[in-house]
Image (cartoon, rainbow, N blue to C red):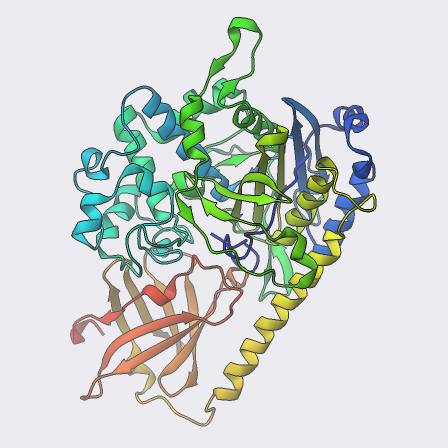
Length: 544
């Protein structure tokens, strides 16, 4: 889940993360334990906030079992005075996936399932669009992005928020097309982590929210962490997300929920709580305690398997030369975790993207080092610049006292990305036949169109304008304007979505609409707006 703002895992393969969180007294007390390269860390984070227009950031660092720094910077919401601290809650989005993986490992340790079980052994109704994939899909495959689904396939079933239930989303997988071979290549998905959530509920006999609370949050002392935004209470210390409407104007984004696919990205947490999560990961599954009080969350064997590569990922070239030092030697995905290296050290990490918030967790097992960065703006460059600065300091990178200027490097990457998006739009403008007319009167495009996996999309005429509505997604409402021939552009009323799309009507030989296809306009649009996977067909003529 990501967008120009919300970070795309494919765009962030080289990026690592630093998050420090604590109240000011604790943070000041920890300063002496920081490497000398981080003595100006506060000023550096503030420079990052200023460069990338991030209202608030929280960071925590764990080293050798101790929380050496946890701190908040900036404000929870722009224009308001409440500041970010170590206990401020942010949406951690896809960093939830590691919790879903750990939940399955807990159940595996208890003998209630194995990761090699077929999914249909636990969910007899489960179906993919290919019978072979249905039969061979194992629980481990749900966690590894190698199912044959395309990038973000099916995400529109819950992104933005829809009124489908979790099981309804999973059942609609039978109609979501596969675009690759089973276990043949990496393609990031969210929907199968929603299926994993259902497996957890079936095997444990309890709701996933309850399982997380009793089996992970409570034992680790993650007292402020919430299953999703539905569990937040009025007046709590919660950050507000921010996005740049039309990729230009920063504004607050409305709070959203994934009540239907929470296992993929629903959790809200703070850097204080996430520090406890990193500690148990770096300790091999052991929950910190005194003497006999120490106990395990999951076995050492299960952690080794969670951190073992299942799906190799091709290592892309850095987008700008300044990021060359961040290029890994290997890249892949395990069970809910990305795996790569940085300057020869193995990294276990993940990013998260949510409307208005992005985050990253990075672990360096060899050095018992963990870094988490939570932000309330859709710009991954901020947490990347902070993370790599911290990694260089802790790993004692040769060179001057600051190593690579990651702030400048990521600023260059953002500039290049924005430039490519501008060039893409100019190419569309150059190819447009602005004198062309639609084949039908506007009333001819009115009607209800159905996609096998999403459901119905309705086009109506209101006050002389065409309006398009995704019937299960309240936020996807927008005006259609003619582009050229039988192609229109839908501009969503919620401008912070940054997901305007071309809408192309294909006519049959009799002049009636045969099919409607959609495609996001900007390359910066989050991949979870998988409009391109839709095959919209008009319902019977009487429904027009």
